[in-house]
Image (cartoon, rainbow, N blue to C red; front, top):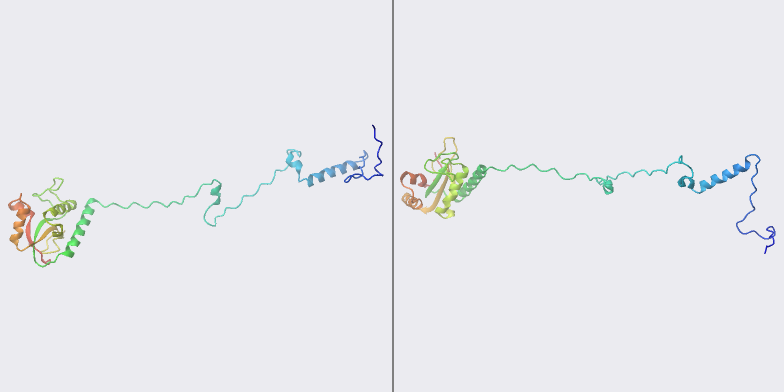
Length: 239
């Protein structure tokens, strides 16, 4: 069934409707200009949608690029590290290696330490002691040999000999001095003193010392025994 036409002039038009726009005319370019202006305004209000949807063509401007934020180096740390950057090296440079003392230097240092201990504990009161070693660094003794079979003694050999003599008496009775520390001073050809090992076992006389030497070195006789063990007295050093 066909409805009769409704007269919109008598009944109110629906909300939001307005009178229909006038039809464009072909006279001049006035109508066409109005239409272009409306489209341009729509593009501006719409935030340039045509530019993002590709409607504007290949010559449309690219979106602005955000400027990079400055690196905050106030605390000495580059925050760009968090984004994958390489961390600056903070490892300290290795310290130079400390030179290692040679065996000879170590032996001389230990001999000197033993000497200081003996000087602090011994009284130079003239009592009898047994001198069981007397050598300077580099000396050659044809009657004695080192642990390596040599007749030439160096600091390591002198120290080893002094240690081996600990078996002859209680350790508290064995001492290391130099030929400048007691009795008549004597020196090697190069002016160095001799390292001397003594045993202070409470001897009452020189004969007591000689008897002890014979028992301590039963394998030796004559000059060999005198070369290894001799009676001395602990006196203040003198020339």
